Image (cartoon, rainbow, N blue to C red; front, top):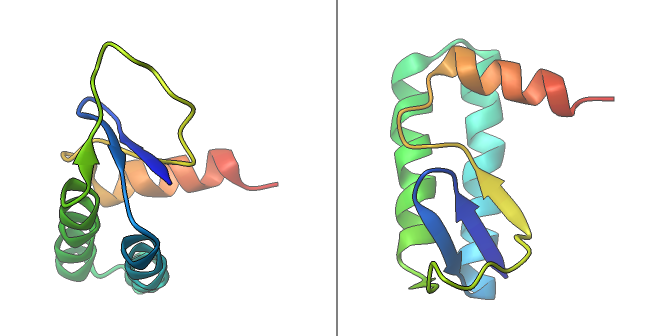
Length: 88
């Protein structure tokens, strides 16, 4: 699986890492719903760390990404706006 972190690059992650990201994502959504900024920032940085444990791909070769994460400095408000854009 290929994951892009905006303004950082692409990483190839394992299936185990993907499952860890899925669990973190569920907790991130709960933190957003609870308006818990501390939990959001902690969990978001955990998600980025999981991705960065993977193999960083050469920047000269662009591959389709299966997942795209926002940049490291994303705020809760930014995350909410991104989720609203992606909702149907």
